[in-house]
Image 1 (cartoon, rainbow, N blue to C red):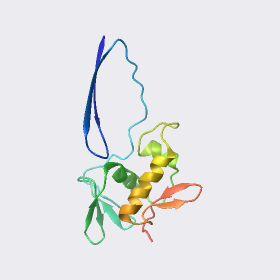
Image 2 (tube, rainbow, N blue to C red; image 1 turned 30 degrees about the vertical axis):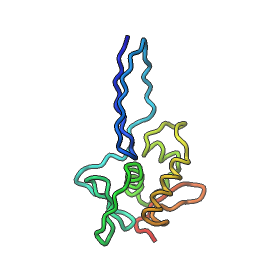
Image 3 (cartoon, helix red, strand yellow; image 1 turned 45 degrees about the vertical axis):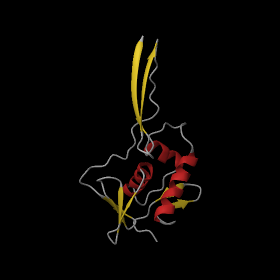
Image 4 (cartoon, one colour; image 1 turned 135 degrees about the vertical axis):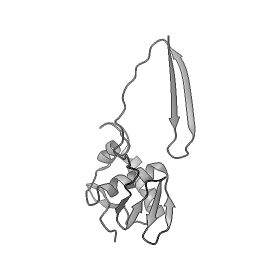
Length: 141
């Protein structure tokens, strides 16, 4: 018999769930790689007229005001800002931001997260390139 202890934190609510299970056998499968959104504490990211702080998940506007973002929205915006000027398909974002494998995750997850960022920050922060994906420009218009 094997014992499995697992702790999961919900990105949106911050709630922590713990699982303790006893089973005769277990198969561990990697469902994705770690997202490429790791932040270096001393390196804020600036693009599109915004600065993402690395302490917490705040976005600083040019006028000094700060907006706190949910973790998933922060990670998406951070990735696109670190790669400002580059277009990423929903599938690329699912791999790079969420850490999903090629066939995992729905492009709708990206679409909904982009819509939430746009609701908070304005429609031009993350732009859609029809037929290709999403981009953050150096300076948003």
